[in-house]
Image 1 (cartoon, helix red, strand yellow):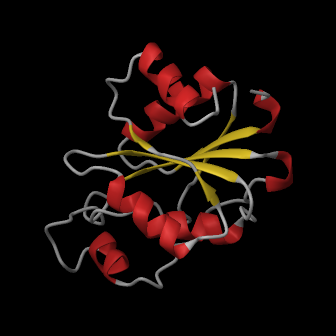
Image 2 (image 1 turned 90 degrees about the vertical axis):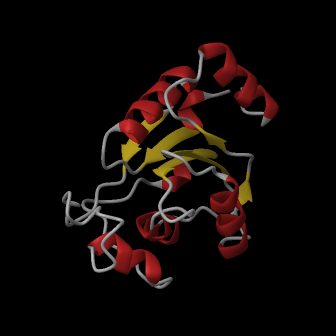
Length: 162
């Protein structure tokens, strides 16, 4: 794999997804890009038990597109994009839609990876493939911190990235 054409882009609130993204970037030699919300999420915003919390409201609205701080990466430089996020309400957070729609990912190999306290990644992948069929989606993986180097290498080989 030519690490010059690989990007690991991720959104993280608690640091779990960030740690996995850093591990993945180190394993692949990829560039790292953090998807930072223009308005940072507070603990109250992340309270999934409160139907009026910011995340609850955003996730109920399929058209929600939280703004991203700073500029987006120049995707002309990349052929492969690993896209990481925490699983919210069994799907990717709506800021991931903001990222996808702000970048030209058509025809790129995009590999989702997620972190979660209890949900899998299957529904996230299904939803992303449905909403963005122009992207060449590769099999994603739930990365919750226990992935060994051998397991990561096996996954990368399986999706023909390693």
